[in-house]
Image (cartoon, rainbow, N blue to C red; front, side, top):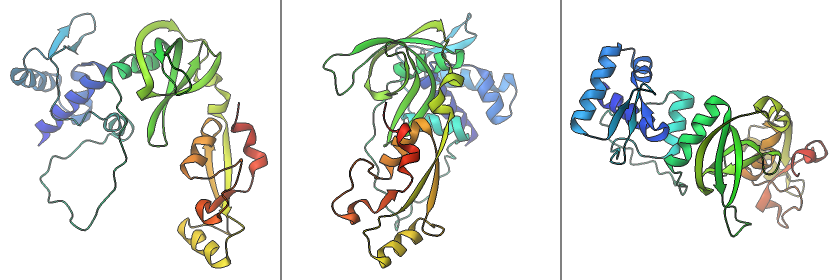
Length: 275
């Protein structure tokens, strides 16, 4: 099973980062350089010409014929490993028949988008990119200095400094039309992103228009204390957090059961909601 896990990691890093060497395999599986190198060579024996060794990068880089078959090619899989070291067990197991989960629609993220973003984030440099938003008919080019990835509303964003807008902004990963590594050193870094580095407490409560019984049900749902729930969020993510909880701030739903929860300290957070 461990060989399958090694192949999985090899494909995962090669697919999303564009290259692989022995170091991540050595760290993840506590194996020697020789053993990690043997794993790569064994993989290549069955997948010829999919990876080519680059002397300058000291790594195997992907070729056009690289087509992984073990990973599921979702960016969530990569981030799950990156953040929590999650590696599939590949143990045969009969699935539960009494548990069903409705899976959200997946947003496609191109590995050719991720590779330069990951490199720029690691090196604290820029990418030259074109981005298509729902408010524009044509992609707009810009230099962008990424510093963090964020998942909200079931889609991944990248946050960083946009030279075109001269501000820190979030961009949906699936909406980039082209991304190329630029290498220009970042002047406006994560440390300077005030909204990102500020933390805000959102105080939530059941909508006051609900009946006492309905309020009690919600208090139990969210394990509230004294009818209140405090959620800590980065200033830059306040709007995303409220949207995920389906909490409106500009206008309440006509039917309180449609919204259920409200933010009771709106005056404290409104500065984080809009530009």
